[in-house]
Length: 470
Image (tube, rainbow, N blue to C red; front, side, top):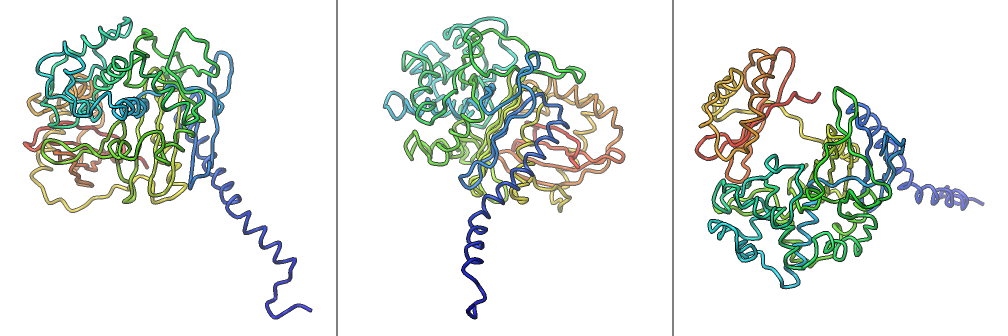
């Protein structure tokens, strides 16, 4: 006879099976939603091929390839397809450096001139830590090297010696590939081998990254993807560079989504290095003023929904990559693409919002403007950009490409858009010693996001403008 509980033994068994299957069913539904989003976004962006990995609460939700790894041979992207790292490789170069610190061969406080004795005397205050955190003041070499010339390690170093110092070491953050090229050379000098060999022994093999390796044009490398750029909407091959430019510590690795899933496990466990080393790697750099900038050793250290977001992106030779770890939500997202115009960030943000809507990019809306004088200054600056009459004295510590490339681009774009509407403050942040203002501004029926970074004396260190994503 059935008791008052109303639960028969058979029903209890069925209920137990359903409850046990619940997480798997939920994970399957989540995978389907992410998969559908990735396919739609790939089509929208026109990405030739990409691989995506998603890990949530320690479970691999998705690991899948999309599109083509090689158009000429009609090879699809798979989870073993190798993509170039771009600057995602910086987090690995930092690991190679920290392995030398732990071995007692190097100190973060070492002056660079201790290891590069023929460097300029003005480099004496620059330390290994400054290179790792992009606070050395050494100008970025990007766009200055002859990309068709092969350089020896010594020639790379001597070339960087010629670059001017943009500010005293530790004064501010300024992204510089030069620093990470030097870090790669430094590991080479200390170990008598290459930083990639060090990574293979200290990171790749212990972490189970079975196919991660350095780039080589000569080697026969299974599952290597081609890199593409879109020219008038049609895919073309990446631009050729000399082999030596794909050996440097600023980001010259191959890895697959499987490799980065293994890396994600190591990151979550804080494996491979000591707890103290990981603390150094994932601590924001402190500037001379005492202010902090959200960058560690090869990692951007951001926040999303009030919780830590650790990530880095990369772009090189027709490849784009991004690895993001939403620490508080135990969510990691890997996006590897073989198309120069791809936006891994949009894939990442879309996937994060599917997993947890609170992780999507914050919606911009007008807020109270308590600094109308700054808004008036930046309204005038926008008009000067549109008219092509910007006085270069308005800039300070700005990257060289800002005046040479970005400024003419925005002048042409703004002339086509016409007169702007009133600036509406949407966000004010302090990043390091800089104040960053984000405005919404209408051009006819379209709304744009206008962002300007000001140093303490009011000069512009960075600016940009993009159409507001609907």
